[in-house]
Length: 290
Image: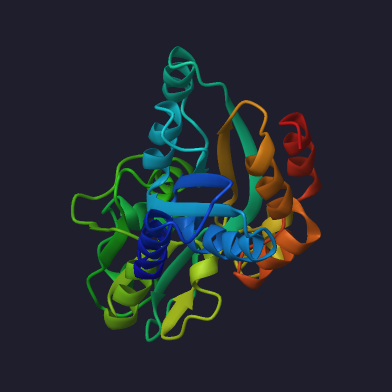
């Protein structure tokens, strides 16, 4: 995040000084899960398109969607879909929200590397985060109280995990962190902890366990690190990572999104630890005019 803020500050100074003449400026705001990936995509794109500048900020999916609704951004990064109320607000503001899927995520449940529990069902994960299971001994682990780490309510990951896994409300005792990286770092230090992050944040992480999950008792377990399991749906909390725009993209915005969806862009998606989009979402992107 500091790198992104610094880059944006340096760019602003250069523009103010008149040393850089940007023909196109693209504003992107939203999801913390997507921020590192889209920053990398933007860097690669700008290297080949020096007259286009892309400013990226985080704040969560809700922040990005609100910015799109209020015409404060060109692209909203979102790790969840838009709510019907948000769509209504957008239309009332003269914005026609259009969805593009740029990657797939295997939302990962992680623990400290010293925790012997390696597998859980979705029901067990949901019960843990609702505060119904409070000790690791209840799921075959040590006699150790469970410490919960999650995201803030403006996070699309917070919303997706609550709706897809908990199907209820989080425990009031959950530590609400500002981003994926903070959760990973907390879990490295806390032997009692459990959290959830985008798969791109665990690919090369050390000192943590990435749990295998099953959709129900008796169902096969799968890892979010398994590309085939994520694409096929065998891994039970796979999700698309989205960008929302106003109507059909044009100009530099269209060109950048086409780069994200190109073979070169999708290779970057894989290098950042996420997964390329399957055919079903390619068809959805075509409906968005891409």
